[in-house]
Structures are given as structure tokens and as C-alpha cells.
Amino acid sequence: MENLPKGLASSNAGRIAQKLGAISAGRVLDVGTGRGGFISTLIKTLKAYDSFVGIDYCPSDESKKDMESARKRFEGKPVQFLQMNAQNLEFEDESFDTVCISHSLHHLANIDRVMTEMKRVLRNSGNFILREMYGDGEQTEAQRVDELEHAWEARIDALLGITHNRTLTRQRIRNIVYGLKLTEIEIFDSTHIVDCLFCERTHECEDPRNQATFHQSTKDVDNAIKRIENHPDLEARTRLIQEGEKIKEAIAEFGASNASHLFVIGEK
Ligand SMILES: C[S@@+](CC[C@H](N)C(=O)[O-])C[C@H]1O[C@@H](n2cnc3c(N)ncnc32)[C@H](O)[C@@H]1O
Image 1 (cartoon, rainbow, N blue to C red):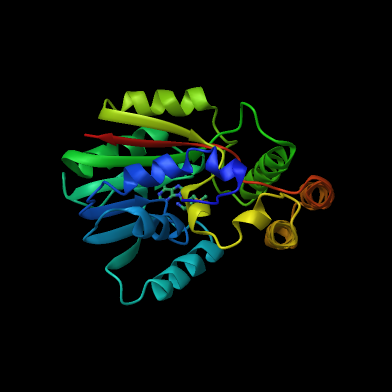
Image 2 (tube, rainbow, N blue to C red; image 1 turned 135 degrees about the vertical axis):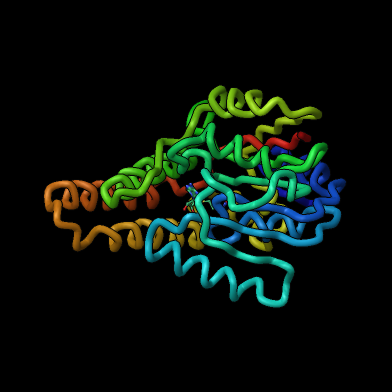
């Protein structure tokens, strides 16, 4: 991990990677898997694994397509994707060696219920891994733009009838974790995700106003606008589209960077 840019080197991404690199994860369940992004992260960082099951309740046509493309992306690997509600996991008690959930807590309609289900299907002494961005604390201007975009997208989801809450505070995430009564808990607070360590564009990304981030973040806003462009509530739709344009201006002015997050590793 030499020659890392300053921001990434001083983050906890390296320590998180080191910790993951000591885990033989066995059969892994990824809850709220989306496009399977966290599975990719774990494949790159874990010491070993046997297989993954990624589940998502796929509340929209886009999310169903995301699961389809995830299936194609992981073809030939021991990775399976299932449409399932995490509130009622269709698995036996203690049937996984590791359970994980990334950036999904604030998408859940009933966090306690999902945590209980995840713990139920985890074997004794199995690994519980949680990653969740937070909305409070010291964040750079570019991170605040990301948070703004996130809060706006949450309102778009709400208009479409999809649960998406504001990002949680660090204390709320910690309380959820302590409520799990895990052992050997370690909580890392990091500005950078572990994936940054494998990015070929680390130096570029240290400048939040770099062209690649600008184009991607602007595209994300445009894609979110497309999701509501035919919505029957004209007033709500118009307001959200106008706010989306303002967010694009903020991206151009300040750039955008991932919000900081807590990364939790514990054992049942
Ligand atoms: C922001 S995405 C996280 C994607 C991925 N885990 C990552 O880190 O990139 C949150 C996901 O949680 C899913 N989700 C929300 N509630 C769920 C539930 N009750 N059961 C299963 N998935 C759920 C959403 O459909 C969405 O795909």
C-alpha cells in the first residue's frame, strides 16, 4: 500500500482491508445486494470464501435489471442472486458463516427486523459485517454535495413508493450495532471505502472535481430524473427536477465525494 494519496493513506481503508484479509468467510449472505458491489469488494479483500448469496427485494424495474446484470457479471463464480425480502429471510437458522449488509440500513423499512433475521441465519461465532455511510460529523464540501444528492434521491424514491430514509447518524448506526450483542466488535470510521485501494484512478479521485467523478455524478442525477419524468404528480415532479438541476450545479462547483462511513466487523 505504498504511494497512496494522502487522503486515502490517512483513512481507515487500509486497516479495514487488513482486517478483512484475515477472515475466511465460508458461505456468505449479502443483504440488500443491489448490483452486488459489496460482493466484489469482499471477493477482492477476504482471505478466503466458499460462496456468496446476494439478496434484494428489487422494488423497481431498474433494480430487477440490476440483479440480472449482477448475475451476468458474476457468471462462473460461486455467487447466486435471489429476489427476497430481508425481513423474512428464506434460509434455515445458522445456515451462513458470514452475513453482511452495505449501505442499505437507511433503505430498510424495519431495521430491527432485518438485523434479527440476519443474526438468526448466522451460525454461532460467524462474522457479521456492516458498512453504512453516515450523514453527520465532519464532511468536506464535496461529501456534503454527495449527501445532498442522496437526500434528494431518497425523496425521488419516496415519490415512487420505495423506502429510502435520510442517511443515519454515527450514533444511530452504533446503537444498531450494539443492539446486535456481537462479540469481538471493531468499528472503523473511514472517509474512503476499501475499494479505493484497488482503484487505478486514486490520484484523480483525490480531487473531488475531477472529470470522471463529475460525469458520473451528473449522470446519476440525470438517471434519477428519468425515473420520475412521467410521474403523475406534476408539482412534486417539477420541484424535484428543479432541485436536481441545482445539485448538478453544486457538483460542477464543489465536486462530489463519497460520504464517510462506519465499517463494522463482529462475531455472533
Ligand atoms: C444503496 S443499495 C446498496 C447496494 C449494495 N449493498 C452496495 O453496497 O453497493 C440498498 C439496497 O437495499 C435494498 N433493500 C431495501 N430494503 C430491502 C429489504 N427489505 N430486503 C432486501 N433488500 C432491501 C434495496 O433494494 C437496494 O438495492
